Length: 264
Image 1 (cartoon, rainbow, N blue to C red):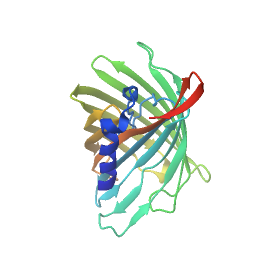
Image 2: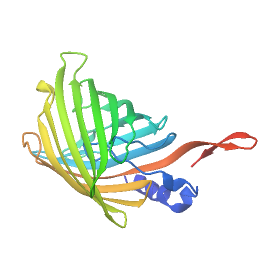
Image 3: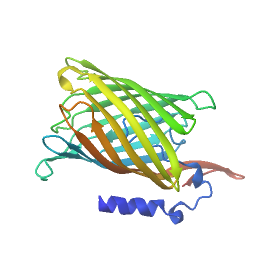
Image 4: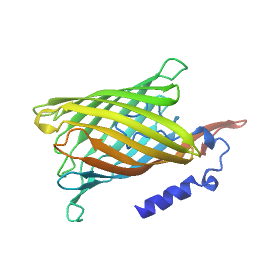
């Protein structure tokens, strides 16, 4: 983790991003919040999210969620990630790579002054032989994002089809996230979310998540906060910290002699 954070700092330095148009790229985190923005980074941009969370209940569970996102076009993004690289009990004795998911996110409507941005995604998650993720699930989301007076709002609703290949069960979910830029790259966020249903495959879960963000450059954002559980059957509190970074964009630039490829 220390090496990863050092790499982030180096990538975030102005020298690493000397391109005069680099300011056009802005990190658009999905982590640590449940809700994601309906917007994506521009075509050719790679976005990386990574963090650390600790779920506290009878036994602490540490996890290192990670997500890679690549925008094929300005409206289509491919995603690959995991929510569960975990260590049960904090002893180091039960480390495992637990579950992976992948799929696509499509922006249907771009955000305007009145009309919100609208996007949908379809993801498939499956077990990698770990202890928490044991089924193959389909996750289907609808995203709405808009700037309101004083805040930015992201509203998500979705359906998860758990164990869709054998005795499936449906889980419904919703999340509303409000965020606000404060000053000097610092922002605040507040979110309420709930997961309902899922049969025997999932516990009911709902929470109130709050935290702060810091963006030293548009391409990099750090986050830190807490997630207080409203149902106490599986956890009481989750602590989180992490970052989102846009380290690379593949861009084609036209020249008098023809087209050339630039990387920034």
